[in-house]
Structures are given as structure tokens and as C-alpha cells.
Length: 135
Image 1 (spheres, rainbow, N blue to C red):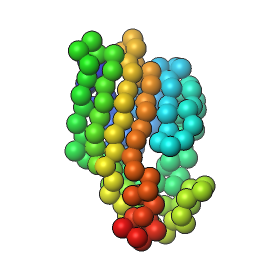
Image 2: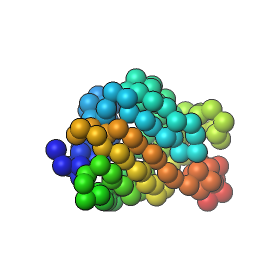
Image 3: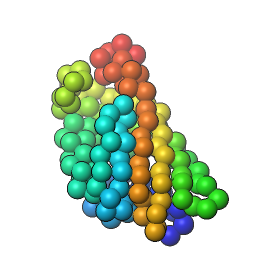
């Protein structure tokens, strides 16, 4: 699968809520750099991250644009997150069903046709301002 198609398949699975479909596209030793957070390694750590996210957030991505390196080993994506904050997430404001819209992006490494690294970025301050009612 071409790298661009791989990344689009990853986000299509995300938007469908198909977590197993997302996980199937990852290398066993995938590295996941959380936005302003720690680095996690492995598909099972990624599975646990998705479960934490699904508990607190309902999100859909739009405007997904994918760019790839000539050799297909690197990719970047830009998108807009449309979400609802469902349940309190540790260290963040209380959840009351707040809606938010937030630009985001990610960088990827691809190895042997699978995603070997995902590094996510978004403006946490903007998100906090939106869910705290200060946006």
C-alpha cells in the first residue's frame, strides 16, 4: 500500500470508530508521541491510549491532507478535529459535553508498509480555552 493510502486508511478507520482497523495498520513496536505528553511504544500501549481517548472524547476529523516523502518512509497530515468532551480527563478541565473545533497535525514514519511512528500536535491551550468557555 502506498504511504499516502496507508495514512488515509488510518484516518478513515479513526472516523469510523474502527480501532482494530487502526491498530492493524501499525507496526508491533509503533512509537506514539502524545501531544505535549510522553512517548509510548507498542501496539498494546496504543490500544490503551485509544481506550482512554474513547472514554473522554468523541471526535471526527475533516479536511485531512496527507503529504509524503519521495521514498514513502515519512508522512505528515493536517486536519481539523470536531469533537465533544464526554468525560473528565486527568489534569484537564471538567467535561460537560463541550464541543470543540481544533486544527491538528501528525507526523508519521512508515516501515515495511506499516505505521512505525505517530507524533500528534494540536494547540492544547486553544482546546482548554474552548472547553473552559474562554474561546
